[in-house]
Image 1 (cartoon, helix red, strand yellow):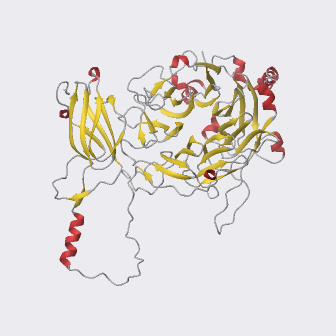
Image 2: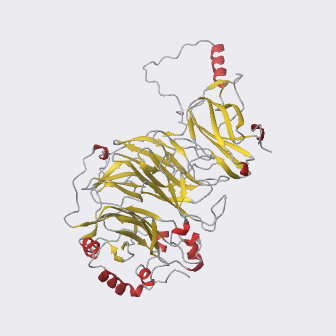
Image 3: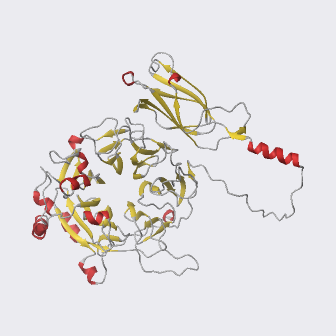
Length: 608
């Protein structure tokens, strides 16, 4: 059984029947009063000495649009140089305006942590740390975080490239509270298994990978007190335990609730036709409104290569039950209302019992055209499709407004109030005439422009290439203290080396099953202990931050999956102190990824 084929020629008659069938509903009546219209903001003021322009231009690729309230919204953009720099824009109920010229991203994400606090997945900054491996430049796209609070960037987070615990590109972000935020992305690099995650616990940002499943995390949304994340299934993903029905959704529980991650049982999510492979659907776009979590996915290229693409699948979770609204289990005529192959965005419409879909052709999705129209459609909680339309509207086209690219991002802060961002960075607004503006948000935290991003925590800071210019006013040469003194000073400088981060390693088993590892840290550092049976992870601790000094970490072992190797991951959070090269305190334990020898386990149950 395959997904139903579409017949575009029947679109007009079927759409008319669908509109007639639901014309008496409140949702249709309310939406008929609202219309989509292009509402592009003016460019930001030009720098001093540069002639500016008030003619709107595209904002560049917009990675995300999120709202805290109908008159408080944010978007993150890659920019459209030289007019639009990468950064953040804010909506105040009346207009969009530039909020920050920092923390932009190639395909960034936004996570609200509070009314005046939010996080962004942002691009790294070239040149802060000159690191490379074999001439390769460090990756910068979507692998750093910015934390905004009170109208400024209060912290920036990154990690050195080409390490086992380097930050991977992130595609999803969400917060359950100001002290419980998650960020997910690509699978971990070999030989590790799992998907990359970072967790903000209110005081520190720690790696918390999803173990075992190497599926890239693509979307994340809060619903009923937990975060739901969707993953992209691929035939080439690395898995510790391959499964014929891998979960497409995970639930992330609040802090202090165990387990941290729970897979959403695949048999309860009606996604596939009989015989359809799990990798034949792309990841689920997620959105939530009162009492319902929505998901929508397009056919993946795996299906395209096998027998050609078909329409999207839309599902909805309410009262604990998933229902398929559009897909292989629905009536064939439902799919024929959507003669488009790709779903690019989904937004549930609060208090309306419906959601908006942004659609595109497969060809344009691969290579977005600046002259493609934006196609949208509305789907009800009963699976009825309506209001499929092409933007700009006929009225706008008649006034000289041309297409501005396909729809890429959607957000609906309230009923009959939605925003659509196109691939070229243009904004359409759904609202009733006469209600297109709201009371202006005057919170100074969203006035901008924010121009400063602090140094990245987690990266060593680059010292200047040369000593600072002498501006003391002294021009005479320094006094000559003698050749011998100068030579001794130079020798002393060259003879100092950094002490190792780790020293004093010892371990033993407690009660036969719990490994206690003791060590001394030279400076504050992040530490994680992983137990492996050959290449398979059988136990691990969470990543913890320890202050300098003598410390210990405990790891519970499973006698049925006894490890053959222990990997201790460490990352210093401060510069290592230096000592004389002849000092007897210099050890041999290095920083970074440290592999413990087998003999580090002693007593009953030690490694073979």
